[in-house]
Length: 506
Image (cartoon, rainbow, N blue to C red):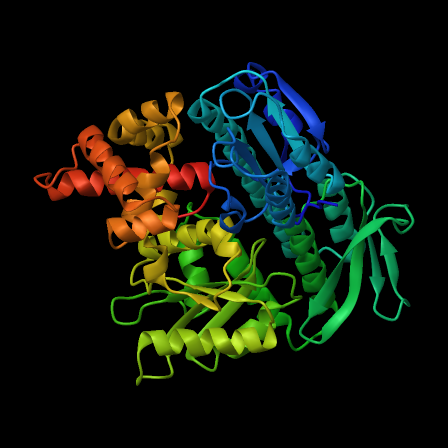
């Protein structure tokens, strides 16, 4: 069975995508699977071994050009590989390669309950992906905005000094259903309002404080509660429990709450927020910059106290605060003056990973002014929300590795990006909308390879084919030997932007 690997956040389903006018024109026919499967992204490919390049959750569009000469057992293996990758589904455009969907593909899809769709009319893939990604991105942005509002509401509840039932009421309003808390030894049970604890099936989150796990919160499975919301809710409950049980740590909790207020106020800072940084001894200056890090904790129940304790091994001043998407660390005055910045980053990340399994540390730029620190906090929040960053297997992501994503974070108008890509790559995109095989994969392979030979091997084509396609691309885009550096740079950036917009990867 093909199962969905992600949470049930504000996702887009295949049913919603097929309702788009451009896809209705294709006359879709569902041959296997369910239309309510969530779709993370839409991808087009004619490569037989495409499964190795996917990350899960994609709706794969193909004309079957790379499958046409394959025997039935290979077609079944193609579908098996995609099911193993846990793609959302496969849509096959009928026409030149296939008049009908091969039975081997249908049987393999049904055996794995993988969504398989046949398109009976030809539609331009570029129009399909543009419409689909516009819907996907708009939902993702709406989800991030909603999480920002929820985080502010939870932080406001903590700041008001709410008790445990009070903060559970706040959480219940956000998920739209009763919420319960049960202590670790089950001696303490609370629920929102007059309701009892949610009965099974329910989703739970461990509530972790500096003293370890103190219990768990529970919400009904039917509640609209994305993973990030539950993490933020558990953090809010942990703050309330810690404030009620740890007298000596009350000032530390107060300072973290002030830092949360500082972060959630971005970018509307004033003198009050500068005083918060001054009180925390974190106000940036030309001679004493403030360092910022964001730590993705994955499924680990990591508290800000754990991360803060580790940070003090490397900085004189360090304060950590849990946010909706990770733990933010602001620090000053490194303790180690010898060794490279890369060594410091790796050691810091390694120590965190040792106590918080699966964590990923994102390095920020040291900032010397308040305005630059504000911008840095914005960038870090964008980075930690990026899908490719959250899936990283590295223990640390240096600031040099996020330069392009930071640039994209400040391109607020999606239409500006689309116009730039269309202006720079228009002839290639127009060609791909009407012809097969498409040329964009060749362009990306050339840009990401050391030579045409390496690009040919990457795509699995002959050197002669690669040479022929590269000549066509040079003519279309004006990238001949005499082309200026600025022209090549513009085409390269446009191709990377196109890849980012269509596959959510760089």
